[in-house]
Image 1: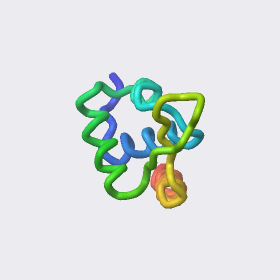
Image 2: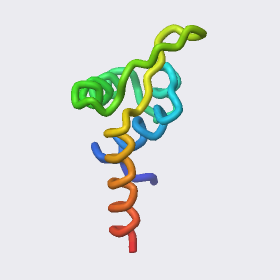
Image 3: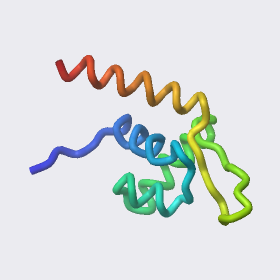
Length: 85
């Protein structure tokens, strides 16, 4: 039986899926979250300036991980590697 992801892991998944820009639905499905859980975490990441809206003339609304979000993701991934030793 697979273990449940924690808060940090869920945020890492969302930030990772938004690296190249995507709409909310794609990020939500790729991060394997239901709508209510996704919205809660997504709102928090947006408020903290870790995800931003990107102007994309070809798509409706696209979100992307900010530079600050990329730095946080990098640090968390490094910590994950160190802890799994």
